[in-house]
Length: 181
Image (cartoon, rainbow, N blue to C red; front, side):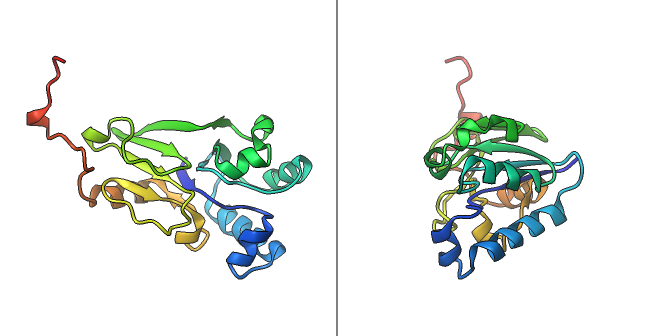
């Protein structure tokens, strides 16, 4: 089983298709085919917001075409589109989530945060929303489709990238931590 992260697919969203220089059918097929070429049975995909635009039955139909177990971290467009009502389409649905993977804490949210759970211990933070127009410092990464040729980010690749990034701005070295407080 593999784990992937992504954000900001905006399936069927007219403005997003236009801003990407695509029409809606082509954009949707491009993202769907790209994702399904990566996902195998049992794989998990964490979508960090702004999944799809459209009526509930259209979103359900789209979801049925995507392989894998999908976890949705809700974004601003998901709320505008009432996707939070489609709990049957996703393995889980939340506003914020913490993954513990290979002894690394990874905070998932649609929005970029400066401080987040255990950021002072160099936990990682993955987000979307900015469509890769923001370059964060520290152990933070925009996992949106716009910065990865519409591909999903394998979580192991993210760990490699994050491991080479500088410390979070609020990092406290182990020798300076006060565990008795």
